[in-house]
Amino acid sequence: MWTYHPDLLARAVPRYTSYPTAAEFGDTVGHDDMAAALDRVAPDEAISLYLHIPYCREICWYCGCNTGAANRSARLSNYMAQLREEITLVARRLNGRGRIGRIAFGGGSPNAISADAFSDLVEHVRAAFRCDHAILSVEIDPRGFGSEWAAVLRAAGVTRGSLGVQTFDPAIQAAIGRVQPEAQIKEAVSILRDGGISSINFDLMYGLPGQTDDSLRATLDTALAMAPERLAVFGYAHVPHLIARQRRIDGSMLPDAAARFRHAELAHDTLTGAGYRAVGFDHFARPEDALAMAAEAGTLRRNFQGFTEDQAATLIGLGASAISEFPDRLLQNEKNTGRYHLAIGSGRFATTRGLWRSAEDRMRGRAIEAILARGVAELSDYPERTALRSRLLPFVERGLARWEGDRLVLEEGARPYSRVIAATLDAYRGQEPARFSSAV
Image (cartoon, rainbow, N blue to C red; front, side, top):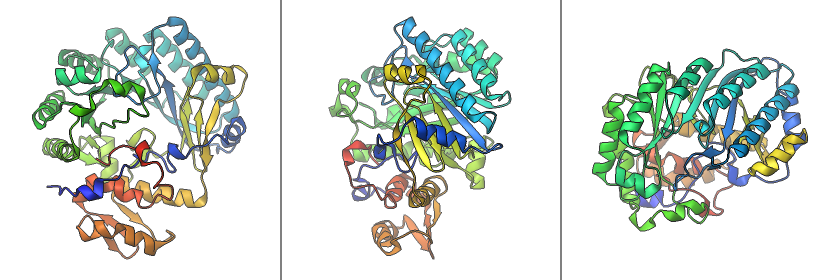
């Protein structure tokens, strides 16, 4: 059983998919920084690609992603043309250096574009980077997904699919602007299985308006009956002052902090009780899945796509708002698709935001990732260790963590506190807490 300490969870903290986080990005980087980063890629360096499709057939009210309505065919075709051109620009700059092991398509909703357009995109990226054997994964909106798309995924060699489910409760679906009947999701799973997808992930959420213990338990049971290999169970981050579309959600209907904590525990207990392994603080996977095996082996990583078994230190983001991660810098493309088009159309990288990571940033980032992914961090090279021990004392006193020399070890009951514990190592925090989500 987890123990609820509301005072330790009162602080809003980042999800730490990078360090420093995107909140620290500035506008002092640009085309030259991306060009130089690509020039430094070693001939046999492992690289992963992320391709962003910033469109959806329907816009969900809770969503914080950079996405717009896929309501004009010309808009989509123009974007896809520029995305293919950016792929060409990056591939030419690499000039055969680097080894692409994974390609992820996200959004938005990649299936907001036509199946044929997706097929053309896969062919283009494989040819540009000469990566016929890369592992392909795709985020999928069950709404508008059918056999034609499944056939294209099979032909493209996609083996992993992630479905945005969120909840199976019809009333809650209506309250968050994402109505998708259970039968529709079940059909999408069946089509994916028939199409050769061997690993399916469900994204679920707690902390939704009107959500109760019973409604969450029912969603978890329904999800388990469809037997996905992985599940991610996220706490909804309600920040309508930053995301205008969330103003359509009735904030008075949201569960309070104690209920959110209870729901996170319910998800953990239900899924682990069903045989899934808890991975990090919000992912779950079957024991035979690569993600669970990475957690077991102590090789789990965390990047902009969440917890992953991907060991590549370099992630190249392609598309509007996509973020690239290099060992010494984080670089984000222009979010506005019009300005993104202008940059790529002129033969320049669309990098407009980001930062260079100092040696201290990289040290802190490694420690934060170790806490979140493995629950253990070696802090012998951490500066101001006396101050750090003081900040961590409340967690140690309540049995959530312990010191083994200069090694910080989180106890099993610390899982819901891991982000807050990680934040004690963050040199940038304490600024604008309203920009971040609840710790649980």
